[in-house]
Image (cartoon, rainbow, N blue to C red; front, side):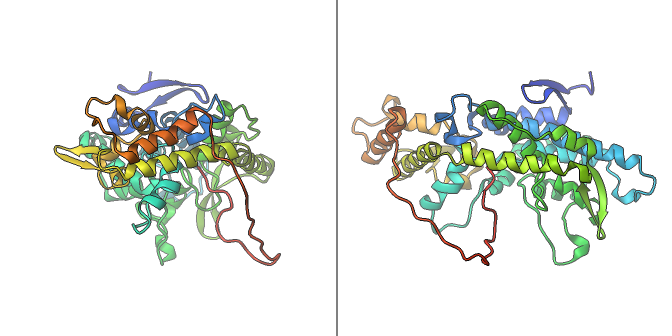
Amino acid sequence: MGDRGSRVFNDPIHGHIELHPLLVKIIDTPQFQRLRKIKQLGGGYYVFPGASHNRFEHSVGVGHLAGELVKALRAKQLEEPSMNSESLINDRDVLCVQIAGLCHDLGHEPFSHVFDGMFNLQADPNGEKWEHEDASILMFDHLVDDNNLKPLMNKCGLITEGDRLFLEKTVPNVIILASSPQQLYRGRNNEKSFLYEIVANKQNGIDVDKFDYFARDCHHLGIQNNFDHRRFIVFARVCNVEGQLHICSRDKEMANLYDMFHTRNSLHRRAYQHRVKMSVEIIIKDALLKADQDPHFQIKWAEGNMCSLSAAKRHKEAYTKLTDEVIEQILHHDACSCSNESTPSSLEEAAQIIQRIMCRDLYQLVGSAALKYAASTVLKGRVLKDR
């Protein structure tokens, strides 16, 4: 056994995972346990019977893989005598990267991207742009403060302002690019900027978040995964590319990386953007919009304080209670002892909309339109949005 207080998880994808005591403390909090009640693939469970896995196990898997990759990179650095001492990975770096991987999805809302990608846009069209990455910062701060984890973090050596900034920028999968090329990343100096490429790689999209959900989603969906993330970790190195340190692979790994992007395309085409899955999620979105309009359907976030679904993102206590169970609460609102005899019409309409999922009376596509681009037009942004 490793450090006192560590714990071993038997994961169906990665086998036996042993995690640092601080990571175990983070997992054993209400804010992290909430992820057990948020489906990884949103409405995909209503299409693929095996897709019942949650954000909880995915987050544990990403925390594990983040540790595996950063430790492998450190081992290779120690074998390279010419490596600059400033860029060498230390124990604090390893722990920070593991925490970032573990907590990167803390802010996910019910049914994953249904809330931030569909519901919020219509429920609060004039509000500021809000995505689950923003909520991850809110929930991580709430997790640390509400469970008094700062003393333990300090005891583990996470005491510097750089550590705080690193977690603040890495947990929500966001990189802040500064105007000066010497200060590309906040929280770590330019010699360790490659650490930001482990959990969420904004340079080329090759990161451990994808490694886990490719393997995990394929396992539960029954889809073949040809990408070997273990092989990638073995051959990964930190290299100087035109004066900037990046995580790089051998040229002979090109075929394996092609398989990664092929797997991603296949998952989007066959599962993430499945027409029935999208129909289910639109129904869920419509039901949530109806419930959000009802003054009787509120979330309690403090003594005597309640808020609507769309306002929960402004209250960390309310957000902690926001999970996939919300549609069961809508569907069975009349079973609540506190419900009024005369059910408000909007909540009743919301329940009837959700009932369509249960009866498989789904929305049907009646028409579509495609945008045409000239051959020379460059479409900016990603064609496939990651889950």
